[in-house]
Length: 145
Image 1 (cartoon, helix red, strand yellow):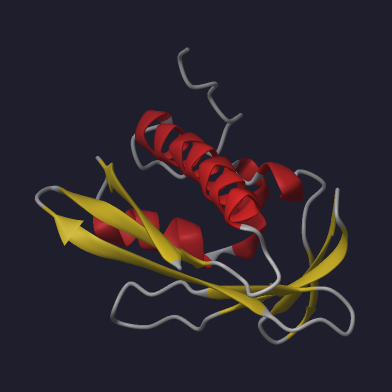
Image 2 (cartoon, rainbow, N blue to C red; image 1 turned 135 degrees about the vertical axis):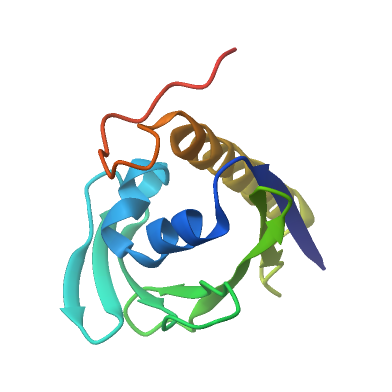
């Protein structure tokens, strides 16, 4: 079972992709990483989350808008998120695919998808409302409602 969240972002693809390639930006929109990320080596970063210490392994820069990343705790099998940014008019479309793990209930998977969709909505709001490409990364705006 899988679910792909598709989200239009009214910002240039290159700007969104560059933002997503930088692991230090993830705490700006991913609540579980609000404590920040610490670089370990290579493409690996470590974070303290409400679920314990995790390592995140980020994909390398590429020409296809791919920013996959894997998350895993000590001795755990990596859980990979497949993510892409593709052109969509003057902006772009974020495609974020999640797969249900064998040991995960359907209800738990659906809850995780809903949580992730909320985080991605924060990302969209942040990118669309931040200072017009000047690179100023102020506080994360709170989405309406």
